Amino acid sequence: MSWTLLVVAGLFEIAWAIGLQYSDGLTKPVPTAATAVALVISMVLLAKAVQNLPIGTAYAVWTGIGAVGTATLGVVLFDEPASLARMGFIAVIVCGIVGLHSVSGGA
Image (cartoon, rainbow, N blue to C red; front, top):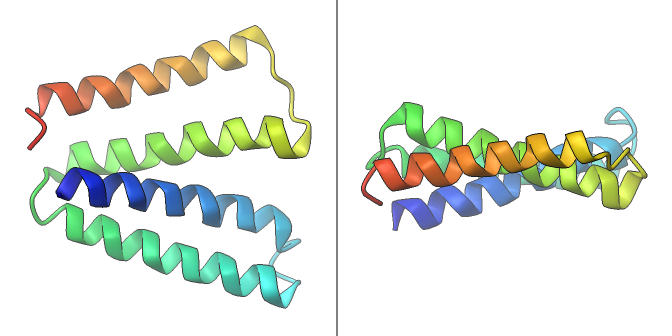
């Protein structure tokens, strides 16, 4: 259950990071409110997950999910470059996430 909470927390991290772009520097009220809600949910779920997971592993996975999702959506939504090198480094982050999960025993 803790890994599920952590993954959902990571998805909400993506949401608040993307929300920062849509909020235009926190100047647009509705995107700003949605960003704030996503941030709080992400933090609460991360806090719940670390009750049963090592903080180092959980934080690395949480930020990894956020980084991969935000970088990928940056390409899709905001026309950020999708170079081979960029995609390769995103893949390295994914490998790190999978590796951390596998060596943690899926606890």
